[in-house]
Image (cartoon, rainbow, N blue to C red; front, side, top):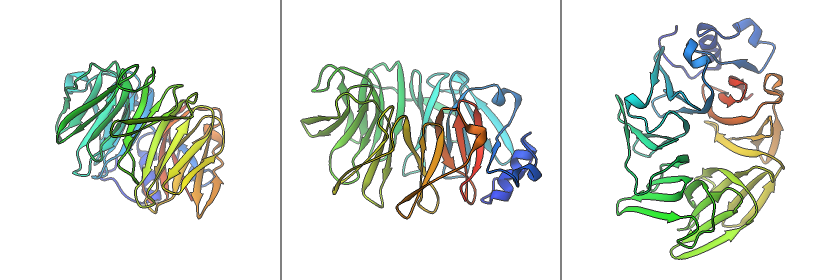
Length: 307
């Protein structure tokens, strides 16, 4: 097992070899290799992968809590360690470095030694997405909520001006004072004060990714591709089940279109040839190393070259 995390693709591939993945020699002929860790980790259904500001890797599973990897060591975290539930679907870092995990049962905060469940004004069956900029934003069932310095603000579906439904995410707009709520089959909701606007009301909005430098926001849908909104207007890309995943360290957007990964470079989408992931559902991803990323799919977690 290696002793430290590193920012080079070569070291990423050595890490895979050290944790039981394909050999370094086999990596020379493909851009994708399985990323494996402990036996318990390999047996888990990973739905979320995240690299925090300290370089630690976090993996959220469908029913086995959280695994972390840091300085060559694996750690398994469960409800006994303060997680709100065994199902973890998303992570988020706040500007102050705080780490949050969301999923079944609600949301938890990590204090560098233990997780602590955050008490919310509504009892969440599940929080699909947590966002941690300009406050703490939760999208889930049965409500969309925000925690700011002034306390909690909650919008219940079927009330508070919202249609019936479930929130997949809640997030602030990077170019206005409004907030977005993505719903399951009830469209994209924009909230500005007391004004509520519902657009694309039949669509299923599943994911959100904010591009602060460009003052724009990207949304993923189940059937209609990816939507980009900014102060200049809207742009649709692709079709089908699609999601913006993350920005690379050099600012490129990586997105999934069905079982395919694409990178937006200088205004042009470039598809990656990732045969090992063909036929899989892509759940999440995070940049890791120089020109590399980790991608969580229904077939497992893969380390991928983005070159």
